[in-house]
Image (tube, rainbow, N blue to C red):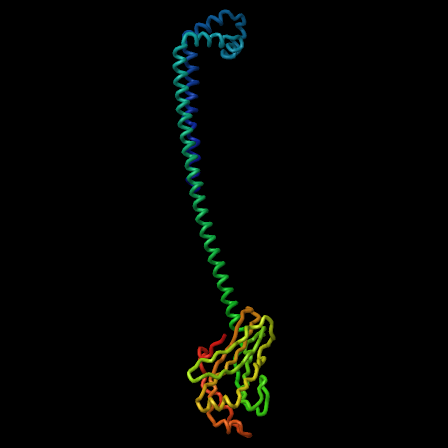
Length: 319
């Protein structure tokens, strides 16, 4: 690039060699014409004879004497008058030559301007392409950084957020008791949840109930909506829903295969990292495997056999 620019400078400087040489040649030609012209010499001799200062002419240069006493001006006029046609032709040649020189120089300048514009356009295109690539790389870097941040945040959420999971379901018997306005003997299911996550859970609400349906039927539970506000449970904190109290007569019917019993327990909550509503719901069948008379007898220790096979959530619809 540097050598090309230097070469153009030298070429541009050489443009003026020919015109300046031509101008010098014209000046020399005119001077030679003047000095060798018969008209100019006759006029000069005539003017010299009229000059009275001979000593001055001998001492001073000839051209200076001619210029001072007006000889050069008068004889030049005589020379021009005598050679008017030739001088006009010579002037035309000189004008034509300088016109060609101006055209040639202008063409070279125009070519240089075009090359400069082309170089500027190429540089602009390259700069635009570099800028586009830079923007693309920056966008890719920003997207990668955003993806990394999202993955890191999601990993943090998955590792640190609250998880409320079912820990156990205890059981027992309550005789001559009152649950939900009903009095009698009841078989009790006591579920317990626990926050096994590393951060606290908010908006916590636990709920549980049972349903008795005909054989082959699908239980339906009227689950309340998640609370707008609720309790807070820290890590390893317990969540205990309402005790499920199944009446003794329902246990008898299920034992005799006259109906089926299902229980559903649910906890709604949010985690502090995302504030996303979450829940954990467990539905299972309650199958009496021992005689209810034995089950409700005092001192019986095998009441855990009331909890039967787990059922898919699909078996327990909610409204």
